[in-house]
Image 1 (cartoon, one colour):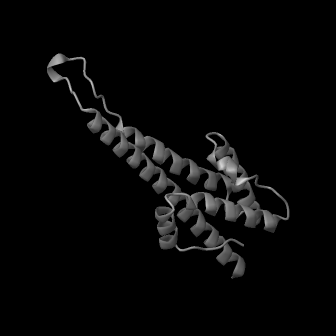
Image 2: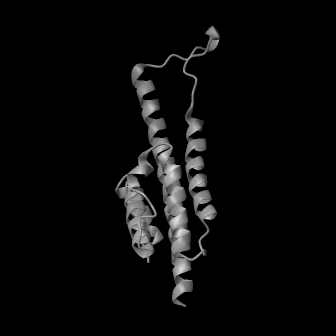
Image 3: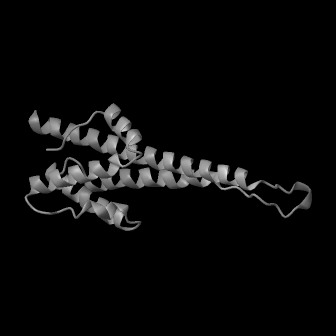
Length: 155
């Protein structure tokens, strides 16, 4: 059914490819699910890159995965894992919001342009790392669930 990279390999590939392995994993698993089903149940993986299209695509993916595993992997569970991974990224990325200028003159915070650029770059790196972590979590959990379902099929 689906290829089975180890958790260490998934984490390494996510880091080395700066998170683009998530798209590769989605594309390869989508193609394999469609081959097993014998039809194009899951649309193109390019939809994952769209802000609202990714949720619709993931629901289609979860339905296809449920069909391939004959109900052992519920679509609602797979979709919930994706929602949790993306919410994790969004919620924790908001901790970096700072107020650089206060209206109280005694506590004014004046930062140089280089300091502001450094802080913004740091926040962007933090957001990137959180998104990378969320996607890695989703891949690892889903791949382990696929492996477990495959084990039940072959046993």
